[in-house]
Length: 357
Image (cartoon, rainbow, N blue to C red; front, side, top):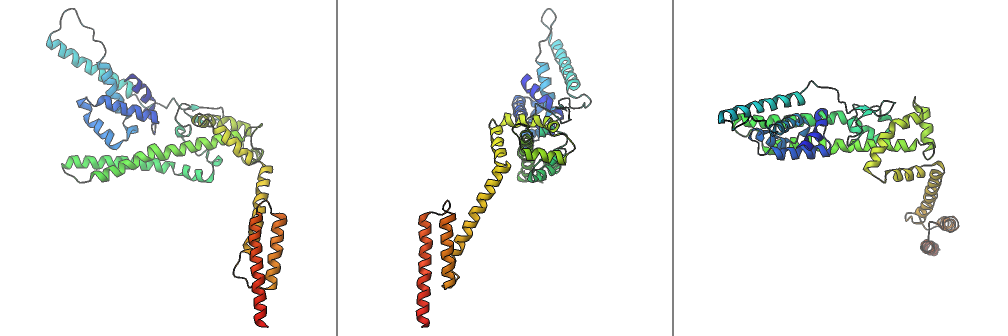
């Protein structure tokens, strides 16, 4: 129980739960199953799965149970039944009061959020994702890929949708209970609750993980020793911040991405190497070389051209060029196949000439 309370306490002001916190919440529900006062809470929690909204209430139940189990200091001699009942009631009230004081103070700033670097990236370094604990992702947006920028733009609307779907599901279930009959089917309620859970436990976390990775990649690209010179020049030209100062701000994202994927650094290093100017130039030249060969082959394989002297001349020139300049792409067997096409065109041209004569 103490472990569950310890894991969930930081989530009191969180917008979403980490996987460890969700697991701890479910373990807490298991502990409450035998508590008749918590029966409805357990049922609704498992029905709607909106755990982040119910952390305070779960902690209150657990704290109350924990306090009520503490050792009772008794006077000498066996207490009467009346004394026992009175003492139990006093202990229960005391437990509830302590729980209220410890779990329902005036809302304080989330002290787990802190400037991770002197540049002011504010987040919780112990969160499942650095990006997930940031108050706002807009300051990172310019450093993300266009596709991820679009996803980041949807974060606010996704959070609003998640809250709305969860609240709607709860309202519909309560309407059924008040009416004493089925106004909304379980399928309708489940569809809303399932969508809310999917956003919270799947869609949003994946966006945050991708932000961690891309900002972590930027950190590696900004390395003065092993980074990407073109990217460093781009940052110097585009942003009003020194590349190495920016790199310092991005370090927590890199550490989180590397912690999640031990091969992250190597994968990005390979990517950076493949993006170097000389490597890109060689790759583009190879692509152009292949495109030229493909154009020659396309002409040879055309079937809509008449068998004329001009066609024969064009085929011979292209086959000779393939053999001379593109032997790294075209095999000798393929060249023999193209020569067979040439011989067929020559034969058709001869037959056509004889017919005319």
